Each structure stands twice: as structure tokens, then as C-alpha cells.
Amino acid sequence: MCPMRPSVEAAINMHPIARVLLGKLRDENTPNVLFRQYLHHLSMMMAIQALEGLHLENGEVTTPLGVRAQVPFILESTHAFVPIMRAGQGMLGAFQEMIPGALVWHMDMDRDEETHRPNFRGSKVPKVISRGTTCYVLDPMLATGGSACAAVAHLKKHGAKRIIYVAIIAANAGAARLNKEHRDVKIHVTAIDPELNENAFIVPGLGDAGDRQWRK
Image (cartoon, rainbow, N blue to C red; front, top):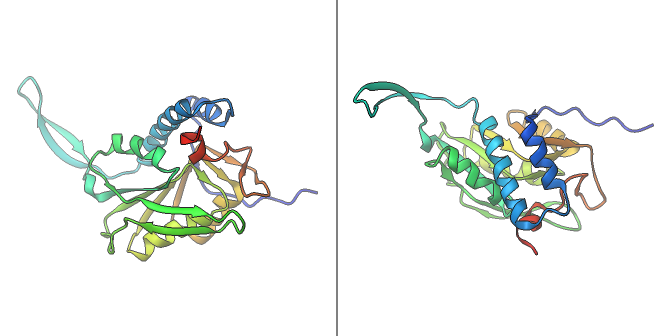
């Protein structure tokens, strides 16, 4: 009898185009240059989903007809994108296209190949994060949840009150762990895959997202 997998709370992007793009990312025959393009396009769709609940301010502009019109706008400096290096860098551009003036705090982290635990190497996160800032952690793969939980804990240590985690694929176990350790963090993904292999890679997954972007 198969063990029951823990239930996961996550917003899954079910748009048909998102599913097609994910299929292209999963394909081992997709070359690096196309992988980066597909990741960018899919990240754009994930950005639209993850930013759905953002607060809008009221403003006014003058149209080409010389008429004043009421329009919404975003306080861009109240949003921070936190890509987990190096794979998360491939998602950053899409989010910046949505909010060009958002803050960017890179976080350098990798995983020990033997223990599968995260190695934290440093970050550009400020000492004190403004209470009104929404942080969006960007990482294509949420595998064991170790790096995800470490990244969220680091942001909270510096004062973050609202954190949204955006991935392309999450393993069921990793998403469940993030749910358990940080119940206040909403997860956005394109797919939740059932398991991890002996090397803690998501199965079926898409391989190493960093290598798929840049390694020949």
C-alpha cells in the first residue's frame, strides 16, 4: 500500500498556455536558449497570477485628447523580488516587466549534494525590511523545501511580514513542508509533482533548472 502524500495548499496555474510551456520545459530535448525563453514566458504568467491581489492606488493622467482620466497605479517600491540564485534569475525579468520599479534582493543559496541541505552564501536583503513591503521569492524548483524555508526564514528575520513564494514546479513533500513551517506564506506554482528521487530531484520534474538555462 502506497503511503499517503501530505495535502498541499498552493495556487496552481492551470491556464492552457502555462501547461504547454511547462511541457516544453520538461522536455530534455529543449535547448538552453529555448528553455530560457519558455521559462521567461511562463514566469510572466506566474507573475500575473502572483500579483493578482496587490493593492492599487488611485491616480490621474492626461490622455492624448487632453482629458483627465482616473487610473490605478502601483506603489512599486513596496514590492521586492527575491530570486534564489542562480536558477531564480531566469524568473526575475518577467516579474520586473510587471513592476519595473520593484526592489530586487538576490539571495545566494545552493544545496549540499550529499546532505541535500541548503548552503546559505549571502543575500542583498536589507537589515530592516519595511513593514509594508511584499516579498516575492522566485525559484523555479521547490524540491525538499529546505532552501524555500531557509529563504523565508531569512526574510522574516529581517522583518518581512508578507511573503509570496513563486515556483514553476514543486514536489509534494517540499510544498507541504513550506506549508507546515510557514503557514502564512502563499505558494504559486504551475505543477505539483508527486515525488523526489534519491538525489532529491523532483520527479518527473525538469532536471536542474540552472543547468538547463546556461550549461551546454
